[in-house]
Length: 512
Image (cartoon, rainbow, N blue to C red; front, side, top):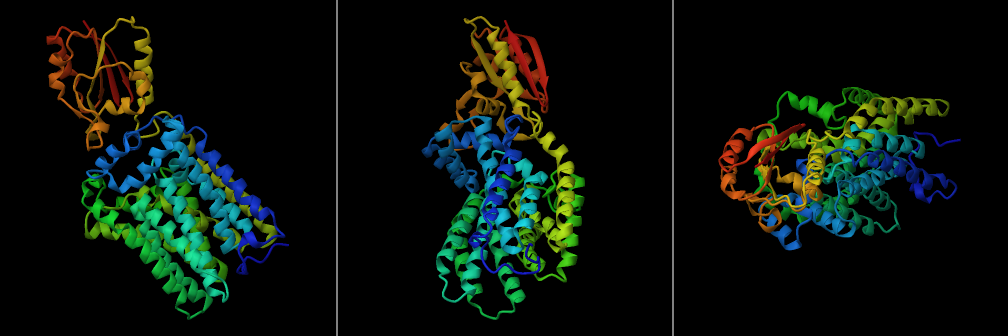
């Protein structure tokens, strides 16, 4: 017999020695989550945002320090971590994304643990599986950015908060080490991604709600949270100040409008998958309705609700009052909370109905998320970049050239990213470009204090290529600079020999 879903667990799940499966289940779900995230993660081409990780994390410590003083200080902690990671395992598109896949697996395991604390192990397993299947999670598990790590730290902080609250509520149990751990992890979350401070603020709402459900008037848990959270927020405050000076980095975010509704309801958790969004919000609505008669469900909503609502509504409100701050992917750290809410309705079912209902929910989730997972594991899945194919093409063509060939390469613009050039492809796939000379390069990315390199204008190409026998041009389809480059090179005695279009990139070869 399983415990009633309405009975609040009297102790941490790991203390139940009679149920070793409670230790095994999180591990199994974690492995499943990792596999879902990591399989095929090497297929999509690296894209602009990931290239920022590569070019930042592969430069020296001194160069990274110079960079974050001018740009991307908000990502400095993540870049530092990836610098150490690349030093240990080397760079490739697979190793770039592997930490995110690992983070998804660990988070899935922690979701099981967290839901076990709130409701029970069976519902925890459902929540952990649903987390791994969320389209936003399958996306961020194969993304070389900090989103998955942010979700992991948010989940760990929430679990530490519950443990600290339980210990504070029981006389004779030392609670302060747990509050210290909570403060440290909350600080790390904000350092990795500044918006995680909103999760810490949301925890305050959770503490008040949980105390009301328990009908306890003691202020010590709220005070303990306020001190721990205050230390974490103050520690990360310098990063917030420095980041505000670089606010131009997020000038691409759209102003809040009617499109924001769709972004919150679909894009935020069910990335480009309306069907999964319908399943998610139907389950959340059912859980909220049934919570009216279930203390346990209300406790879960008290934890997961603020985790979703405070960051989402806070960013939207700030975007209205100041400048645009809300982007759906910037709330990816709330995906574990979404999974907890999705699994909540299964906790309210009698034992004989739980298993078939859980199977139906998981099967529906698998069927709905599968198209997203497949689409996210294609070459052009990320911003239609296809840089891997561009690099492969140039590599093949160069192999067919005589060993005496004197090739140079010119880099045009990158579509939708005017601050970078197509040299970004060489930064992310360097092997194919080994030995090619870039005559327009002034300062490489790692030698300056900016994110990208400093080049001379393409109009200087004619005089810069010298006596090169072959000139390659890699450039965006928009703006299309091929005609201007061709005219410049024609005056230098070079003529177009061949060209290829790969997604949003032109590759052109000129010869004498």
